[in-house]
Image 1 (spheres, rainbow, N blue to C red):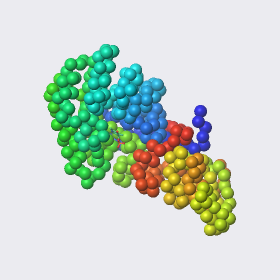
Image 2: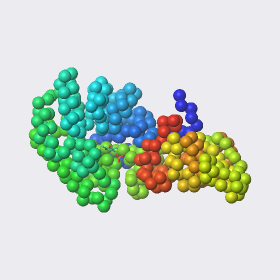
Image 3: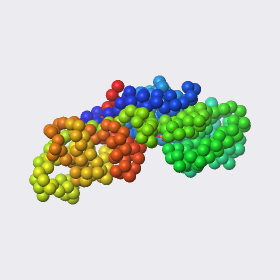
Image 4: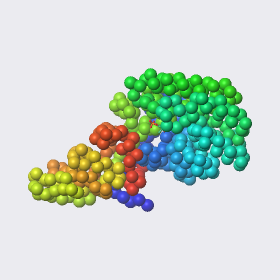
Length: 366
Ligand SMILES: *Cc1c(COP(=O)(O)O)cnc(C)c1O
């Protein structure tokens, strides 16, 4: 049982609000897949899944064992494994997870497994690369895929999908529309020759915002569920889901010339009160936030991080803040603060959220 005082609070109502915000942008018949990979974007995948399971049609995880955790927690919703490996196929079948088959190596291996068992109409998903150049078959692979599928009733193609490379970037509109059009062309070929019509999906969060016409049968909502719309306008309509809180462990009074933290990086120029907070770079607070690049909030006042971020702790300047040991510290509790941290770390909110270590306690607020 984790009883750490540094706690990541997950706001269940905010998650549901965000889900419904995106649903309302879609046709009522469009299915919703919630992406809960990487511990639900650094929160707690099982808890997120339980919050939204009655409102979504699918879950997606990146790796097989992430799907197993959901199944072991009793989640019955279909689970798409976006990036399975051949080594995991047995595990996938054991837990009735649905593999994305993205190249012939894994496609053939799965068909062989399905034939040996034998499986009947086992749900699989086929991914096409339309420009991200990460995972997926090429358009030219379609005839071979179709030929192999024709010989098998061990599997059933549940969906055909692709992934956009730059859906948040309107300067890349031409490229993105090209991806969507190529995908639609691939789908048409498959529909013509397969004999049945699998579900089709290509949109992630920014895709829903910017290219909702391409919603096809389902969309895959990730970061949007967690409160980030990838533009200030969209994010403003979403609710904050992740809040990181802690308490002051100790307060020190530092005299001018004395220093705080490793390498004596902060030097007091006047009498200074520092507060030590039990969260550090091992928990996902980047060292780049040290030396006043980042801040926390104590009793509604901003306390800059002083000195270097340690592995397990940060020190903040509370000279002007009325506070005492044991007081609550808000490390972040709204999206703009996470965006500020991301900006200072030259990254994106996705990385700030997913960096939250497993050492931090998770607490769901209903
Ligand atoms: C992570 C992921 C998503 C979710 O993307 P967001 O930008 O977080 O909405 C969707 N599809 C695939 C294939 C992914 O890997």
